[in-house]
Amino acid sequence: MQSKFQDSRTAPTATFSEMSPQQLNESKSQTQETSRWLKPLPITFNEEAHRYQWEPTGQWLNHSVTQVCKGTKDPWAMKRIMETKHIWEPRGKSVHLALETFLKTGDPGQYPEEYAEWIEPLVGHSVWETYEAVACEYRLADISRNIAGAFDALLRRKDDHNQLVLVDLKTQGKPDSSPYDVSTQLGGYVAMLGLHWPSLYVQKAGVLWSRPGATTLQKVDVDEAVIEWQGARDAFLMLNRPEF
Image (cartoon, rainbow, N blue to C red; front, side, top):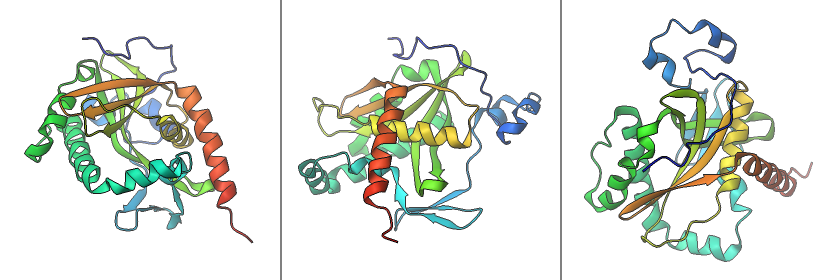
């Protein structure tokens, strides 16, 4: 089975290193493993408070990508999501951790047996034959707008490192569960990634739908996703702007 991201537009060169974008041209002598991973941004995450902090200034970011995207969901859907949080949250954490470990080491590591139905098809998906990760659980921030978040993975083709795909992982409880729209969320990650690494050109975006017994890969249009994000972001900030 071939990857769904086989076709792609020609893109400018994008090289990864432990240095800033201005230093990328000087990194050719680095080893392949060193140059593979995108340098982390100086952002810390307080899991208990679910808040991000920009380390250079100590600024706490007031909003998250998740908060912005919640504004695009109807109240009934949000109520249903919160009612089942005790089910999907531990499953999501376990599957995400297994994927992150797999992308970094080639092995998912140890995980709860009850989630094997989700994890085994995920790490066995054919996309990993063509693509490899250059960033996992990568934190981003739009400092001027006080928004932060973290995407699951940025992938590159193994045979063409200029071809980049930003991927988000979602888990669902049933084999026949219907996918839902996450374009706004992916658009936010692509837009914020461009703020910090303008030389990177993300041609594709997609969602890995992890369900018991199978994983499917859904393509998302990058340009449309960014436009959706910009609209949702601006509407959210308008509603949440300070009174004075």
